[in-house]
Length: 124
Length: 107
Image (cartoon, rainbow over the protein chains, first blue to last red):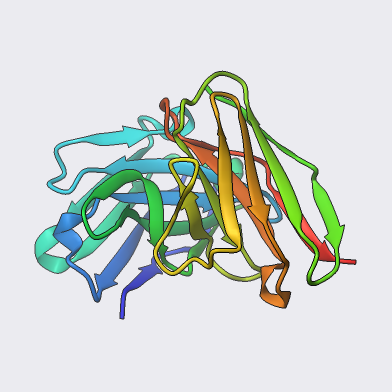
């Protein structure tokens, strides 16, 4: 069974740091682009960052550039998001997502599967 | 940044009826548009990618069409499990962006 399980969320003060993890199982993790997508409470989806299969390419939304770092460890089937200088508007459920693979091709920027998300709350 | 505008915000329909959801881009995204479904308390699920390709396991009642700036997701006959929020997403340009969503609710 394909599974993505996020962890590491919680309550943090503005200016603080947090590291999210995503454990993958049931598929060949190293074959997939991976991403973080967030959703503020009651709001829509916002793409945060992408990372290529071998980690050689990374892309970020402007609002997190210089503050967040996406990384992966293919040996551990794990994806990470290191977050620094957190702001109140970073409060959201953070989803780990894989680039969609069909029988012939793996896409970088269509997302499936998804984890169930981990909530990050930035508040004093 | 490409802005995606979805309409209507809410669609009130009965099971068995057809649904037509719209997504308009602020500039051309060619055919690089996808649709996702999200139910309360759940993660999104990919339905359609590259405008009209159904993802694995997605029923044939879901179809996508369009090109350039105007796109449509059509649900031919609503099943009870289809009542949810639907988002479009583009991959033509960085940053990847999502629309604000259309809620399909039971009338």
